[in-house]
Image (cartoon, rainbow, N blue to C red; front, side, top):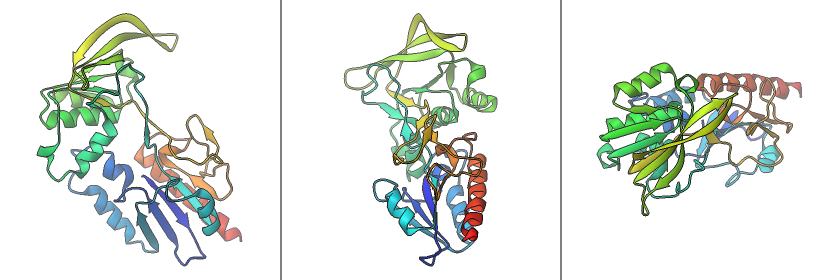
Length: 292
C-alpha cells in the first residue's frame, strides 16, 4: 500500500501509520480494477485490521513533502517504508504528451473512487500499451464502460507477458484485441491523440529490436501501462535496480529503517508478497526494539 508505518514507544502509540492518500488501503483501494474487488472490499479489510487496536492512522501525509525521514527517525523508534511504486514510466515515443494519453494507474484509481461511472470520459477507440495486470485491468474496464474498440499492445510475445494466461483470456473474452511484438514509436494528432504508430519487434539473443515494419491504430484515448517507478525516496537510502535495497528481513542501508512491498527489492510484485514482507519486517523490528 501507499503508506509509511512507524513503531514508537515514546509517544504512547504502538504504531502510527502515515498514508499519502485520503483513504487507507493502498493498491487494494486505488490500483485494482473495480470488477475484481467490488463492494468496498478494501475498506472493509482496513476496518477489520484496525480492530487490532493500538494503531493510529494519519491520512494525507507523504514522505518527502510533509514528512522528512530524518525527522521521523528522531521521533520514532523504527520506520517501515511501504510506499509502493508511485512514478509511471514514459513511453519514450514522440508525441506522448498529447491530450488523451493517460496513465492507466490513474484511470483505475479514478474509476475506483467515482460515484457515477457514467460521467467517466471513455474514448471510442482505446489503446492500452503494456502487458501486465494493470494493462488488462485498464483494457477490460474501458470495454465494460462502453468503448467501441479496445486494443492492448505489448512489445514482446505472449509467453513474456506478466499478465497471466487467465487475464489475457479474460481480456479477449470481453472483446479486447491483443497485439504482441509491437512497440510504440509515435503518437499522432493535432493537440489530442488520433492514432498511435507501432513498430513490430523481434527478440535477438534476449535483446528486443525493431523490425522496421510499422502499423497504426486509431485512438482517441491511450492508456500507458508499461510499469511504475520508485518516487520520492531520500538520497541516504541505498537504491538498487530501481528499488530500495533490503536484506531478507527488510532492513535498508540506514539503521532503524525497514522497507517492503513493491518499493523494495527481493520479491514478486504481488499483494501477498508485500503482506509477507511486512510481517517479516514487523517481527524483526520487534526483536530489535526488545534488545534495548
